[in-house]
Image 1 (spheres, one colour):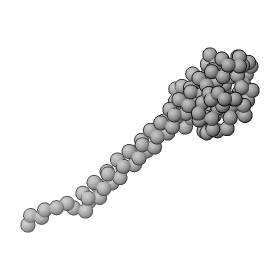
Image 2 (cartoon, rainbow, N blue to C red):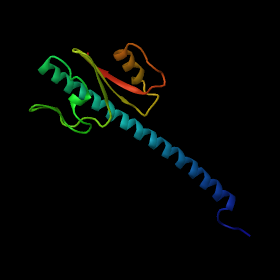
Image 3 (cartoon, rainbow, N blue to C red):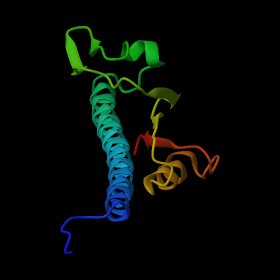
Image 4 (cartoon, rainbow, N blue to C red):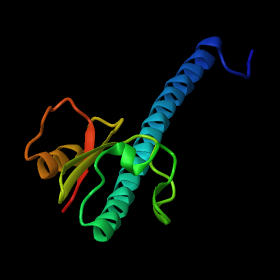
Length: 139
């Protein structure tokens, strides 16, 4: 007798292989979404650096603190001049002196190579290897 079709074991093996592949794809997709959010944070900080530099060109100093910049997700406006239409949702700003500042955001991807290099550039050293803070500072 010649039976056509798949045995139960063959079906279970195929289903388990599909399950493993689906789990790998979902994990990769979540990692790529986190990296995309990190790229957006980096771009926002770079735009913020440009806005702070324009402020510096007008006032020959950087803003005193975060409250002088504006509220999160709001505009960075002083008087009638808008330096940035929408501030990043996550940032920490510190004025070091009249000619320098640091602004940073925490990234999700711990293995981002830019984290250590920005800490060395802006802080002089990696402050804490476990920290995932990405820094932007005045040139």
